[in-house]
Image (tube, rainbow, N blue to C red; front, side, top):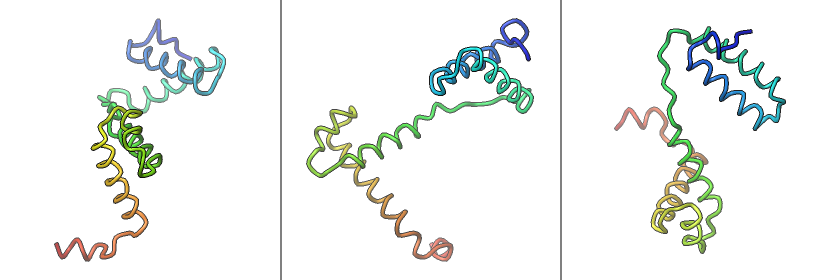
Length: 122
């Protein structure tokens, strides 16, 4: 097992530390177990992606999608202002989010009526 603090690049040490912290927090593992698993995972990632420049997106769209789904699920037709306050958006944004989520929900349930043929005709 590597001790990245003394032998590895700073990025690997930081990755191992972040994984350790999350394993302790989320999986509630003892620190020594979390650190061992984090170092094994970091070893694997280093071997698998070593030498490759990786980009980690911030996940902004994923968080917005999650927020929008929560707004849609909580919307009852009369709580637009309360939801706007709760989620830090305007009442008009709540209306737009609900309309978009409703359209996405309907499209998911109905499917694509024309499939590939419909795309070819456009």
